Length: 381
Ligand code: GDP
Ligand code: MN
Image 1 (cartoon, protein in one colour):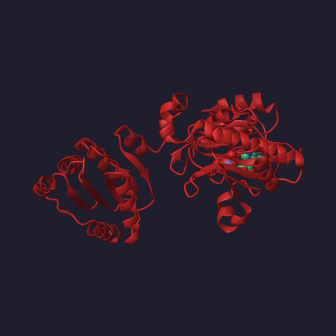
Image 2: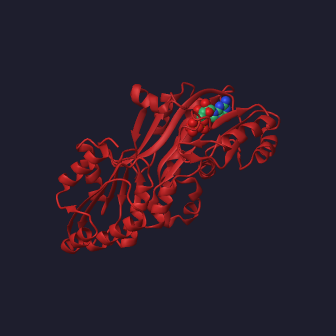
Image 3: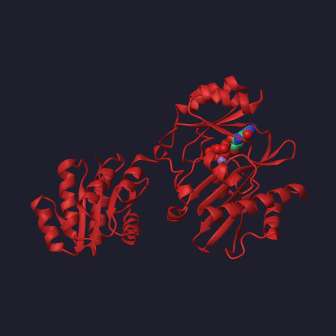
């Protein structure tokens, strides 16, 4: 689950990480009032609150010299759509005088099966570029979750960022708190970028990003309550309501699969045969026709989808349920793109009969189905 920056700041502040006080506005007038109060006549930063990075580059972060300018920037930013997400709120914070920008983040690293702390003296809006073109400027430390991030480890990392001992210590302290927050909140990512030095030599966190592991939400209702469905991609909200695991991707082959493992294998095979999956979608183990209807609606709503691939291995999932779902869904929403169905396992014969009666055909070979779907997705319109 993604959180907004203002929510992440509040949670991280609870772990003792210092952030300048900020408040959220939904209108330019509110922005002006907050800027007046918090900015005390000085400059403020107006920041789009959307679940995506790269807000700065998209024009979603602006320094305003006074409250009137803050209202103007807020009006412009509130009208933006950044990476497909409309901006509904802006955060107003007093502007810091930045001398340098570092990066500090914690992620779960699957290779080492541990949390990994990453720091870079080259923080700021170009951190992705730094990671690809000068990866040696990013320093990593894999953390033993039994002990957490120890003081001497944090200090060593701090020396990669700063020379002055006071700054190294301040950064190390923030890293330890960030790690504690990451662990304590059940996050899969916790990031401060930039961790800035001011012209006065102070170290301040100016941006915060937290992603909470969905599996942690059940035992953290107070964090689950922070979910903002209006800020999430509509397809993901619909998928969650229908009990589907869905992740939107950039390709053109819409995938509808039962089981996360088979869904991953299907995406690999789509790539292997030269295509690109438009989504990850797992309809789950016991699939009712309603789930299949919801899945098809979500997939066909994506204008990038050029072909749809069903890959069903009937175990607990019954082939006839899926077949009925396909027939119902296509009766409600006629398909504009070709559909390829691969289906084997439980009630396979019943499924094939249902599909054939409705004018569809199904294959049993996964390679064949994937190759066909990729070819259809790549065919000129
Ligand atoms: P992101 O682009 O979504 O990561 O948004 P950030 O909150 O990181 O802001 C992007 C950039 O705006 C930062 O890297 C800074 O260069 C700049 N910025 C953010 N806050 C301040 C501030 O308080 N003062 C100044 N001068 N610049 C800021
Ligand atoms: Mn940032």
